[in-house]
Image 1 (spheres, one colour):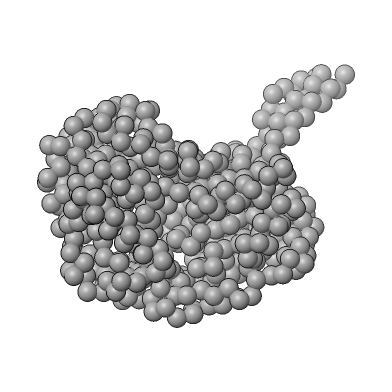
Image 2 (cartoon, helix red, strand yellow):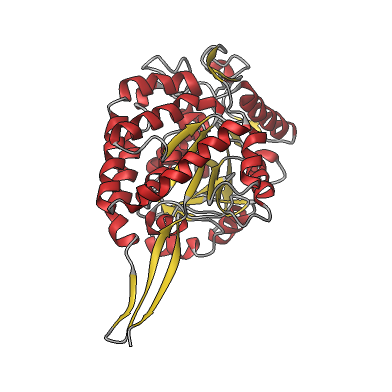
Length: 457
């Protein structure tokens, strides 16, 4: 049995039996058999059914919000993820006709030449627990709209999210065989990928998980989209709005107990603002309330698993042992129990010789360093194995663009962070992985080009 241990109290909240390989193969066969008829439906029909599924998901909000708290610890005060789900789904539905349209090269009395977009076929979505609806929707919505069948394997920490998504899509009119939620163990998942049962695999998770996907897919020529680790930096220039930078970057570092793909994990502040930034950041952190996520006054819930919190504690202890200063006394947060409940922490006197400034933390800790100029900030932001997003806080948009051009990252933000704009491509570089989600490029990843050269005379 796959058991979901709730971070709220350590109890078994949900358990499910994984599908044996023969049953998984049968589910995949049903999906393949159903995909052709789904792709043959008019695009407007597919869009209408998928969006009806989103409506059905929104109608489940009163149940989804406390379920998220029990499954992965996000406080109920934030109301789940369905606002972002709606924003992304609406945008991808709106751009679908243009993104999936034929590219006409010539239509004369002699030739018709065009490039069409054709569904990949069967898409496997392996979704993470930290944003179990938002991350899954990034691929599910455009994949279905483009005419693919989708098999969803959700993280064991958020098993109910997969079930809710399937229930909603089926209620909207997406056939049960076209969208399937399955419970699989790692070995079965790897075996199915290695057997080329899927035409596209989308994975969001750890670098180690991404490497496992690539090993399984080796030699199959299966297309993959991999969003892996991150260590996203923020840079506060001398001309920044200090209060806005503190509020934005600290929220980016601590929201969801730091368990955000594009959360801020390291901050570089111009030396003229450093002391004031740190003072305000500490005050911001001390104003948080750590506790039971079912309490509407709680602003920070537990981390999803005690072992995730243990990794963050180890990084903090190692950094302090190497000379860093921890500015938050955990005693200020009585709910910090040494387990999944972890107090926020701010570190100064940090260096890039410390793991906390180089390796993904994925928890409520951030290191802050002073810098003398843009060049030093750029060098430090690039001194990392990851490249998902970077956040620049400045009054000068031209400077932000010039700095962004020198950063090894997938997205450059100015005066905001920890956000996905569905109109822009969600992508990364280095150990963050490869691929494209959202925007028109997200449709291109989930389809393949087919060329037509039709000679008439």
